[in-house]
Image 1 (spheres, one colour):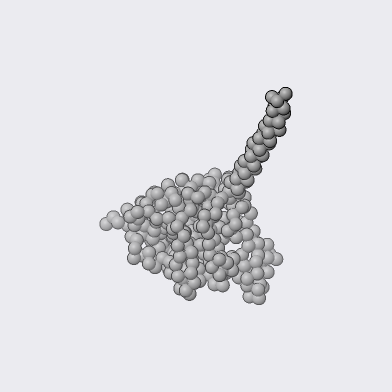
Image 2 (spheres, helix red, strand yellow):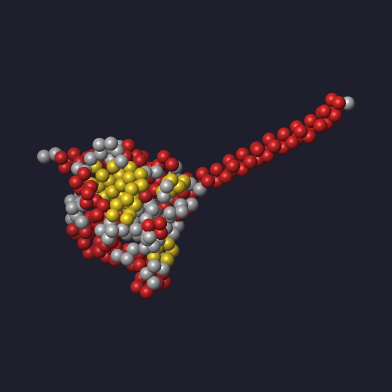
Length: 338
């Protein structure tokens, strides 16, 4: 009787214990699902950065621009490096999108400095800038020049690297400040585009750039135009730092930047490595090559990845870095030979 009673008394206890265990299992399952959900978001925040995984985050640093504004950038440094790569990101992106390539370049012995332009990445409202805004494109060129100036004294070579819209900015900078960089690396550069805003939006840009310069206008680029790789597509879609809009003034200045390059491209004589992607839906590859053929360059090294989409730094960063490293070492040897 006592045993039965004891069993009856213990039964609810066992049931309760089972309920607690079950509750814990449910809690753990929910936590796992939550973590999986966070993981499926494609990236992580580390400090002010947003990268694919924590190991890809660089060192956050600052420099003073010519107008005394403080700008942040991300550094990946290697012991004893004698070559600095200054990286300029695309219209919607930021330094984090280049992190996989940057860490690989760092491992090859380069110092890599990824600049987030004003209004982008880690240089947005947190530093008093309007998201996706710039009053004059010359300000962006001056920012790059101010950053590079001290590097010229510390490094044997300075390489200016630009991806997408950053490639357009890098080209313009090489024209405005021809002595800043020893070489240019342009990765699917936005010198000629396949995608553009609509005609009504263009008219809006012209009008609003003067009357409402900080008004926001949506980017015409969809995430799947950057990459079709699910992991990176998810990273882009969930990126809190990605610019889905830029200001009317920015678009207007971008158009002026195009005209500046077209009017001065014949002066470009900086050694140049050009990367193209055969499946690029953003950049007009033939148009880019045609424009650069008007430059004063004696030779352009062109590497075409026929099966890659626009963001080659996502789809195959190892191959990109291998080809960059090979060309940089080759040109360095040519410079040092008598």
